[in-house]
Each structure stands twice: as C-alpha cells, then as structure tokens.
Image (cartoon, rainbow, N blue to C red; front, side, top):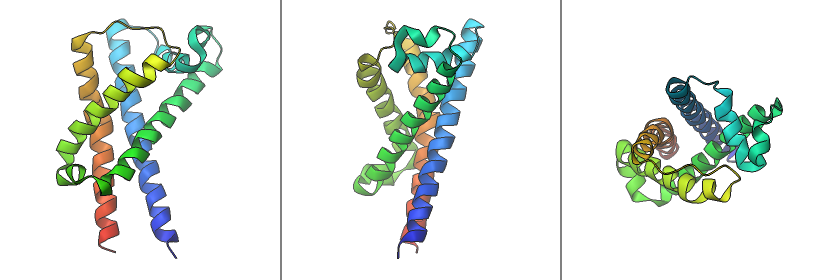
Length: 160
C-alpha cells in the first residue's frame, strides 16, 4: 500500500507551495509598499483583479481574501507542475540552483505572457528593470524552495 508515500508527497507539495507562495507574496508586498508607501492590501486586490477586474478595488473586504486564495492556488499549481516534471526532466535533477533559475524564468514567462494577459487585470507597461527584479524574486522565492523540497522528497523516496 502506498499511503505513506502519498501522504509524504502531499506533505512535500503542500509545504513547498505554502513556503514558495508565502515568500513570493511577502516579496511582492515589501517591494510594493517600499516603492509606493501604499497599503499592502492593494497587492492582494491586484491579484483578485485577475478574476474580478476593477471591482477588486471597490473596497469589498473579500477581495484581499480572494487575492490571497488565488495567489496560493497559482503557487500550488506551479509546485504541482514542478513535482510532476522533476522525475521526467534530467535538467531539473542535476542542480538545485540551475533548476531554480530555469523554473523562476519559466514562472515569470507563464505569468507575464499567458496568465496576466488572459486575466482581467489592467495592463501594466513593460519595464525591463522591473522584469529582471521580478524574475530574481521568482528564482529566490519560488524556484529555490520548490527545487530544494522536490529534490529532498525524491531523494528520500529513492532511498526507501
């Protein structure tokens, strides 16, 4: 029966998604509030605006909650994808730091070239410096924790 492995996989994936999602949202909030001096709630409203459009900024107290939920759903999706790709992709297994860089760039590309354009968020003009900063945040906050936890999980699984 594979229940212990399944439970361990769920724990590893949930832990990686929670850690990566938390590091990423904290980085976004810190960068936004330090650059603008505005409330961190605006970051969560912006995320909610992907589904609700301009209504996310209406003052509805549920919008930051929705933004938080959507943020962690996206982080969980990227975590699940990494855990699924890891045993199938030799490049991800070779070096945690290399795979973190690759995955951070991949996450940025998917978010900025696919998800955000298909959402109801207001368009934001491209800024190369901000893009580089965002990629670095994703490498550190998403790529590294997920790569580390996945590597550790799969090594433990291989060792019994």
